[in-house]
Image (cartoon, rainbow, N blue to C red; front, top):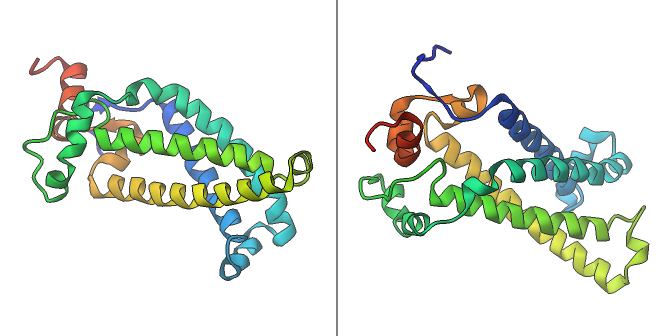
Length: 210
């Protein structure tokens, strides 16, 4: 892909690697988890060598996901702190979805929608990790009362369903906003993209328009 030397660096190689590890392991987790969510999805276990192996691998995928996600949390949490401008951005999000972004409050590196999505994913991930530990039959579930294990199973399934929906929204938004996926593939964005979608961040990194 031909890139302009004046393009802006949005993500380092380490940040992109972290993101793609989380993305890949999430796919493995979703496929192996869905296989036990409903009988219709059980054939997905064949991707992992059968039902037994899918059950064995799923929680270990979860451990890798948790570690990778925590690394991403430490990288990006401070950039995702909500500000009054972000809440104002969210109140006008319908205008943007209708194709009119002229009155949107200026977004920094992340807009209000991205920040809200980030914290919802953090919440889902925390619930999935804790409930996953409680229902991990081989190592931990025997130490908890049955009612706690059953409750954790419900929380785990509900959190997973919400997280899958959030990730679909995340992927759709990345495709819908042209130039976004390039940032995670190559680490850079065009100046025009930054100026249109994240004007405050554009001013911060270029010093233009301050």
